[in-house]
Figure 1 (cartoon, rainbow, N blue to C red):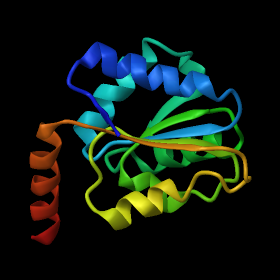
Figure 2 (cartoon, rainbow, N blue to C red; figure 1 turned 60 degrees about the horizontal axis):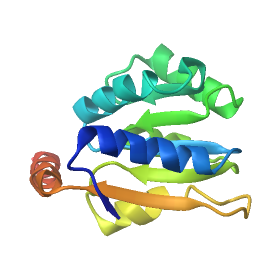
Figure 3 (cartoon, rainbow, N blue to C red; figure 1 turned 120 degrees about the vertical axis):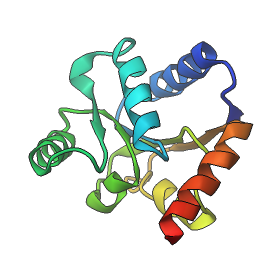
Length: 146
């Protein structure tokens, strides 16, 4: 686990993790669509735009299908996504799972981290967090209970 209180350091930490493993795919999970969009925009400035994309519930069916197709064919190496993405994947070459906010539940953490390492190569599963995440997780949880 790693703290993310400094935005620039947080982005640099993510890039360092990504650069440690040269092969495979990376999933960066966000709890909210807003944080997903913000992180995607920030990362696009720091990595090749051709290897990164976004996936969340507000995308059109066509956008989701296109992103998923690019992901499965290996044209996209990094996906910044909400929970909407985890139901769509069954890939062998996922090497890094990054949670940029504290996961909503232990089950959520285990399920998403379990996507990595199916090819039996070394993997990383990392959680970034700060105190604000506790409030965000509670808000999402309450909203889901309605």
